[in-house]
Length: 185
Ligand SMILES: [Zn+2]
Image (cartoon, rainbow, N blue to C red; front, side, top):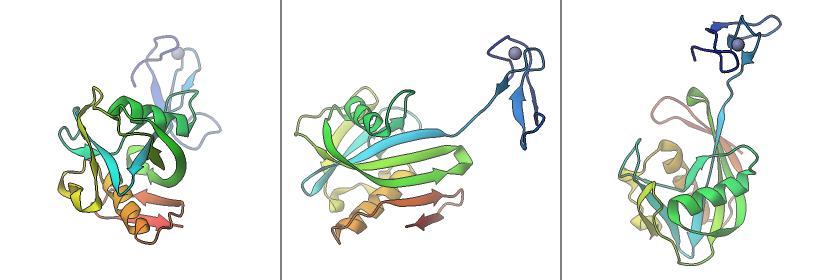
C-alpha cells in the first residue's frame, strides 16, 4: 500500500503512538490503514456417500479440485457466505449446515471456516469459476489434484471422522512447512 485511500498522500509504514506493531499510516490526514486477516467460508456438500467437489476454472490452481469456498463479504454471516459460494461455484443449494473445521493460516493472513452441509437436490452445474462439478466417494476423490492444502486437510478429516460417524468441531493451524498441521480439539 503506497497511497492513502482517504486523502491520496504517500503513506508511511511504522508503529503509531501507543500501538505495538507497524501500520500503514498517513501523516497528512492521520488515518491509520489497519490490515486484518480475511475470512474464507466454505462447506463440504454431502449427498449420501458422496461429496461435491468443484474443478477450478481460475488461478491459482487452475484445473484442480476444491470444495466450494470463498471470501466472506461484509454484512454476511459465515453460513450465508458458505451457501452463496456453493451456489456461485457449483450452482448447488445446501441446507443443514454444521460448523466443522476452522483453520488458522497465519502466514497468509487467512482464516478458513468450513461447514458440513446437505445438498438439497441433484441440481448443480459449474459456475463461472468452475470447469466442472461432481460427486465423489472417498475412493473417487482425486487426492493428487486437490487445489489447496487446507482443502485436502478438510477432506482427510472429514473421511476420517465419517468412519466413526462423529464430526467434532476442531480448530487447526496450517503452517508454512509443507506437511505441518497442528490440530486442537
Ligand atoms: Zn491520508
